[in-house]
Length: 349
Image (cartoon, rainbow, N blue to C red):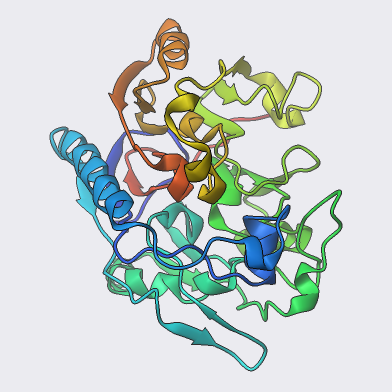
């Protein structure tokens, strides 16, 4: 059996990749970044250059505490290799620079024993999976199925978006792995600024008829799915009440109990100057990570959310990512679960 095996968001965790913030840069100001991260700004208003060193250092400190908590439970933790994000990335159509390795969830999608390099929307992420290459080779040698989506051209025309529905045009498949939430043989695909319709269509064709890709449309255009819906365990999901309600919950999830997150707490901890550069939304701390069907890692400031989860029988590990808002990633974003103990199942009729 492949060492790579992860079928959903909640089975008991055995191995995980945790990102690193080293050499992280704000995404290069080009049309792809404008759509994916800053659709309300002009190109010359997009933050540029490396993240402040203090933020990088404190983020790595927080990630190390997260890693320590998991290794104490016997979970194997892996990290991506350091990558030269300041270097230029160039094709015949455009030139850009790198971004970061903070969020492995964005660039790799694990479905059972398959690992997919996704066709990311931001140009500066085009070769980001190079920092995971030695891991990918190892998984392949151990029996995993490793493949890459068609490499998108990412021409300017792809980003000629409708301001009322800011998504990439359907010229080619383009999506981030974090647009996908896994429920065994059912996957939920968010159409947003980081995932077009054709991306979900390609994913369905690539996985084949044994899987069902469900589209979620007109809910949230910001970017990824994991601060809109969280799959906690079979029969239970956490939803963002500003984006989802009982009328807009995906049809196949109506069989399950849906609980709604309280408002995020301690939002005043960041200055206006800090927030001008921040990539994540005010809901980023809803982005929790499951160690198993009854244990979740949650931002320690979110006391009301922690209480809600505990009323549903969840054990909560409270930890902190001080710069989740600036870096654009909570505990689910900064991880890629590469091995969970469980089976590939169908949870829906």
